[in-house]
Length: 200
DNA sequence: CACTAGATTTTCT
DNA sequence: GAAAATCTAGTGG
Image (cartoon, rainbow, N blue to C red; front, side, top):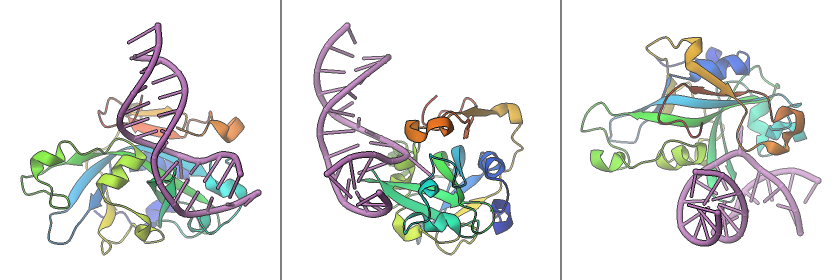
C-alpha cells in the first residue's frame, strides 16, 4: 500500500524508524517496478540540530525541508553525490529522513533497472546514501516532488511484516562530527543483521 | 585489516 | 574561498 502524506506528518524519529522495512519503489518506463526494502535511515530534526542543513536558516537549497511533509528533498554534496531525503513533520518545521541504504527485492527475472540484466543487478550498490541514488538514478529532478504519489516513478509502500523494536539498531549519525552536542545523538536507525546496511 | 588523500562542484559566507 | 548528511583507491602494518 502506498504510504499517504499523513505518514510523514509525525515526529521524525518515529517516521525514520517506521520507514525501516518499508519499500522504496523505483519505476522506469516500460519496466517492472523495482522494489527495495529500506534498511537504514537517519533523522534530521529542527533548526537546532547542528547536523541538519536547516541549522543555518532557510536557504535556496534547504527550503524544501521547511515545506509540507512527504516531499522529496534531494541535494548534491561532495561535488558528486546526490542524497535522498523525505521531509517530515508539519509545514514550516524543518525536518527530514535521509534514506541511507536499501535492499533490492528481485521478484522475477524480468525485474530490470535501466536495461540492466538480472545478473548485472547483483553487482549494483545500494548500501550507502550516495550509492543508492546513483544506482536508482535519483537526482535533483526529484527535488520537491511528492513521495506519496506514483506518477514520478518513485514512491514508498507499507511494510508487509511487522518490525519488532529489538530488530532496530540505534546509533549516531554518519559524517556529522562537526555537529557538536548533536553528533552523538542516536538518530541513525538500521535493521539488525541486515547485509545491506552501509556500516556497522 | 586501518587510515588517508583525492575526486569534483554546489552552496553559502 | 571553504566546506560538504560520501565513496574509492591507495598506502602501510
